[in-house]
Image 1 (cartoon, rainbow, N blue to C red):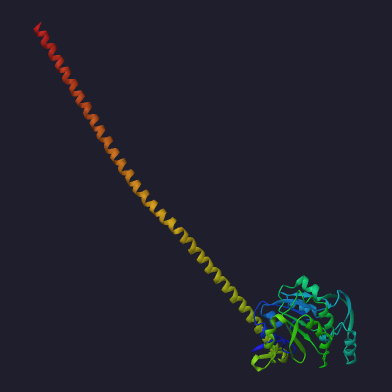
Image 2: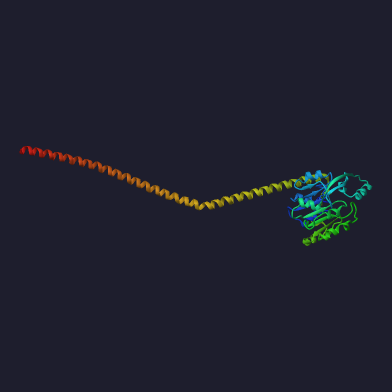
Length: 341
């Protein structure tokens, strides 16, 4: 089962061509960060992006998408200020088009007017976008041509561009008003889902085939907005818990990898030190042999000293004996001489 938060299963269709993690999106007219969001599935999968929303719903968007770049402004063909017609009871109808706003008012909706800052898509990309943009989603209630004409299609080329292509709350097509901009920029139509048109840049034309088949039972998708509110809350809790567990598993995996790296580093150090340790062992043995040899020499020296001392004592005794004999002989000679006289 895969949850779809978007209005028309746009996120499920986009996952066919973007199954990878860590991609990048731009959502112009982002509105709510959960309900009918084209990008929530990707954000939950680790993607980052730029969300552009001029309405009051921006505060919720900004607090929910903390990893993203969130801009409270509108997008048009020029950077300036414009009147924004905001529908507090139906944020999805808010628009820069007075014509569309008046049409909604005739149908019973109430709007408020206020001035909002406006930027071009080119200036936003120049300041915030990476080199690769996976997809661009545009939902601006009648202001599509102005948004597209303010882009730099030569420098910033999203792989896929998704544009809401009917008049708000109707099946009346509007793509003839802005599609030539994309065709001129070398994008080709991949599919139309009844609400949006999907365009693929020419350099990735092979991806068009993956978008031709409508979302179906084999995609295993369930619309989040079709689930009861208690069930939505439960699903949200389960998804949050699953993300927490996934994060913990990733941290454990990183720790295990780091531990293995440290063990390998330790083994490498030991391997480098092994010859030195062996040399130290050899030197220690040589030192012990030298100490034994010195000890033997010292013992021999002590024995030689003792032998010399004994010999000296004996020599002194012999000399004393010889001296005594000499004196005895001298005395005998004197006595003999006296008797002769």
